Structure formats: C-alpha cells, structure tokens
Image (cartoon, rainbow, N blue to C red; front, side, top):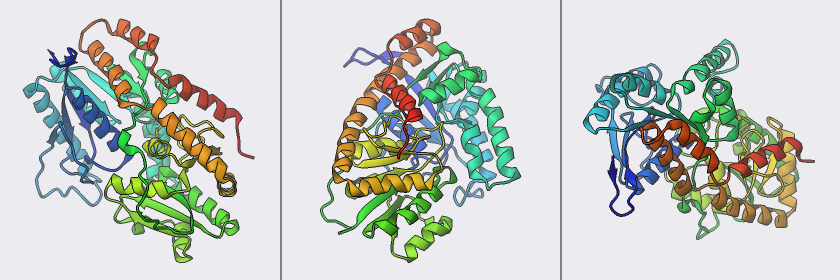
Length: 431
C-alpha cells in the first residue's frame, strides 16, 4: 500500500476480474468499466483481467488490461459455448501471474465466474476477494434457454451457485437492497455485505440532436441487448396494442448487436413490416445518448428482480419520461420519477404508454424529476469512497467487522430512497 501524494489517501493495487468480453456495451461490462475507471481516477492501480477480445471500441484510460492468451485455433467470436470454459481456465492462470507480478492487494471479482476464478487464486496467494454481485443466478440463468428441461436445469444450477459462491467471499457488494437480503438468506454474514448501487457518469446526460430523425412521430424507445431476460416480447406486444390508438407512435429499438435480425421476435418483425418500428445499431454510446434525447418515452420491460439495469440510470439521467416493469424499477417512484407496470403485463404497459401519450405535462414532469433523482442517487464518487473502505477492511487495515459497522453507520447516500421506492412499488399500480 502506498499513499497518493496529492490527496494523502491510500493507493491500492487491485485486480478486477471480468469473465466476459471487455469492453462491451452490455450493462454488466459498462458497470465494470466505469467502476474501474473511477477507481483509476482516484489514483489506484487497477489491473483488469479479462477475455482476449472486446465487443465495442469504448476507449479505456488509466487501466492496465490483461487479456488471456489463447491459440488462434480456438475462435473467440461467434458464440462462446465450450470455449468459455477454456477462457476461464486461462483466466485463472492470467490472474495468478498478475497477482504475483503486480503485488495485488485485493481481487475484485464480478458476476459468478469472476469470484470462482478469484477463489482459486486466493487459495494460492492469500489475496482477499471482494465479490461484486450483479444478480441472482437462479433468477437470470434460465432466461438463456428455451422453456423446457434445459431452463429448469439451468435455474436449479443457478440456485446451487447462489448458495455456494457469495458466502465464500471476504466481502460482498450488492447492487440493490433486495439482492442484499437475498445474499444474507444464503449464508452471507450481515457484517460482510454492503449495498452500493452503480454510479452515473455526467456524460450520460442526453444531448439535443441537431436534427429530428423521427419528425412527427411519438417515439417509444428501448436501448440495450436483446437477451431473453429483457422481456422484450412484453414491450412488442404492448406497443402493438398501444399504436392502434396512437397513430403517430413509433417503436425504436437501439442495440449494439449487429446481427439483431437473427434474433428478432415475430412481433417485432411484424411491426417493422408495417412501418411502426425501427431498429438502430449504435456502436458508440454517444449515438445512443443523442437518440435518447429524442425519445418521448423510454421503456425497461425487464421483470427480473435481482439485477440492476444500467440502462435505467441512463434513462433517468437523459431527463425523459420512462416506464419500467416493477421488477427492474430500481429507485423509481411511480408517478414521481416514472411509471411502473406489472411484471409481464403488456396491457398494463400499453396503458402507461397511453397515459404518457395523452399528457405532455406529465412526460415533462417525470423526465425532470428523474434527471434530478439520478444525480442524487447514483454517484461513482460516493460509490468508490465506500468501496475504498471495503478494500481497507479486507486488506487488513482495521478489523473487517469494525469496518462493516462503520459502513453500516455511514449509509450510502440514496439507499433509503431505493428502499422507499421498493416499498412504494408494492402498493402502487397503474389504473
């Protein structure tokens, strides 16, 4: 451990494990990149250990990126499949080398493969592992398979991993209060877990486009990947009902997936044929930011409760009205910073869209409130300050139990608001 001469704070040597393509436009990878960047900006030495390829050209500054090396005979694109296991084995070896060579003090592991890799290296080196929990695997894993026995097996496997992986960490970070309770129920000690929601970069604020690409249309927009857990079928079904009473309505799907047509839902295909929808492939977030500025309504149809959709923070910071399923509406208070619809209910979503279509004043008020709330609830500066205290605890500076009590007494700004919005969602439904 050294000291930052400018601030006098401790400078840590951190190995951040990301068992995924990096960088990428997907939510988890965006969170990892922005967190690593925020830690590097504070003067820490951040060594990011990841797969040998990326899915986007997002610039990375101030980070040391260590990619696993692999034979060219093992292709790294076109769906990972069995290759992913080989990459994870190589990830263990690469992380071990980085920990030894760079004198790493803390391994910061994300998702589920990250901590599994970290635990193996901890056994060899003694370096503590901080587990950053993005979701519950039993809640999400099944969505990657079609309904049937494979989905059932995946959910059961996810439940086993949920009971085994988090409790073995030296400290766990949960993105939401709901996820914190889930981890505690599966064996994570109360003094070894803290709730720290993601931060938001000032660059997220939407820019007014120079020209209107959707002149005369009421734009309902979704941004992100097209994976099953996003519940896009609910959005497509709801929009199909909504546009019948809103002639100028246009559904715009913004994604980074170049091969989106191969995964297009039949409902989306029909809307495209009829001219009621458009799909835009955006390779840079600056493009997404400009498109969000033109949206009348931004939608997050995801019903999964355990994750934290990074797109939701971007939606709020964009200052546009938004609608979210109750499962993913983290930090949203219905009628104040957005509208919330019942999970998996397309008619409830269509009703929310009609309400916003008919009430421009409501759209403006919700958008302005959401922008203010984003600045209040989500800050990388505050998040990193809490994470630095966790690093100090697990790295042996002070008692972890004492440090956890300190974390508990200095509650992260916005947690009470997140809890309050969760409680309000239970009693509020759209008419």
